[in-house]
Length: 264
Image (cartoon, rainbow, N blue to C red; front, side, top):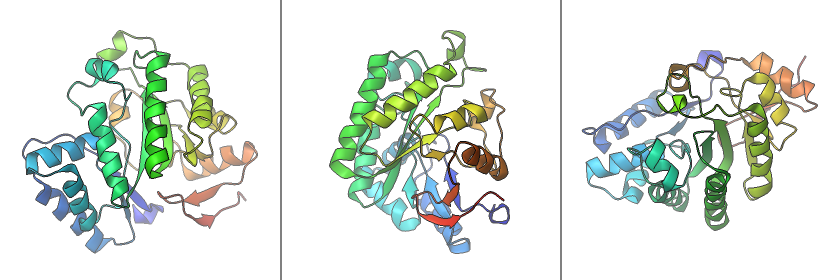
């Protein structure tokens, strides 16, 4: 990963019923001991909730121990739509909206930064999306702990749910991106995704409120299993940013700009 220019690891997995926090602490410490320069952006709210339950710990104590073992920040995965009416239909086995919120508030209170996400196009209505955005806005007003908001389209292929609902369109994605920028004016960064909408829509998203594009991926298994085959590289990302009229800059997970690269 380092040989390819990688600077961080986004690591998420399943909800294991037997693995206690010591397993995750040992994994984080071993990575940090060998690669101290790598930013560890790991474990979604459902995973952290599961680790806490299996280990008999509070969420706050769980996050504090993971932080002390080397966890640098927490991704917003598992949010889907933060409305339990929708979650009961699409993610019954994941944490409730309240638990997702509690994980991120606890992390912010411990001085950790997290990202906020929304997976839409899974059969929800506009009111459910608004509920989701309002919840994120309130958290950010209280804590200021979100570094970015990252919306993406549900990938329906190869999923039972995908057979029941129409696929979200590029128009819907761009409209949602623009509304997110207006609604979440207290979150500094909005990311335009290329993974599910595709590289062209990602580029257009820079004119719809986004100031960031998704990073390159060395390995990705989740949406790939759902049928998504979009791939890109640093050269292509820099080209689409430049062609859209902007200057590409390499930033880390906390949006610290440490390398500014002009397209040659």
